[in-house]
Length: 171
Image (cartoon, rainbow, N blue to C red; front, side, top):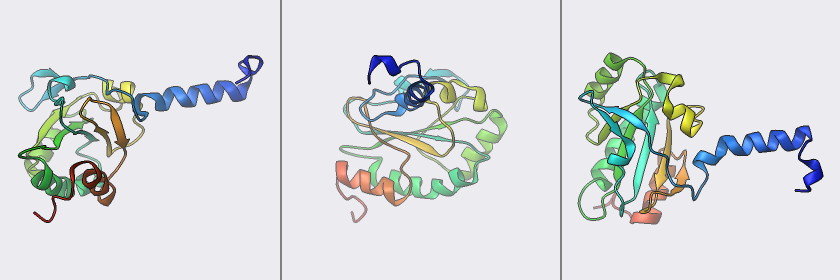
């Protein structure tokens, strides 16, 4: 863009928009976060993202109806892709701000993959670092931890998994 345009309102708006989507841009490496595990221990997202495997970081909340509606499909994905050779590593990160609500949802939903929480709601590091504007929202990471897709749910997620890991639903 011509340098003389950098002081215009349109350029400044474009720059702001790009800064907001940059954390989830395809090809970007995921950003580490300080979170809490199910036992209340402070951990880092990087402790759970597995190099050499495809990973999904799913952002959700106990109070989010669409998030809860997606969980049965995620259980199905985990059963088909989450184990064995070339496993798809799944990490759910809640943005709940009430630990009791988060843990109740974990109990009700029977999610067998890694569960972490920010416990700061919309004011937490998850929202700040990733500029998340709504949940559910996911990041699909390649074997090097770079974002290869995001925001996919249901059959869209299935298409991504089949593309990178083959169709395991018939097995």
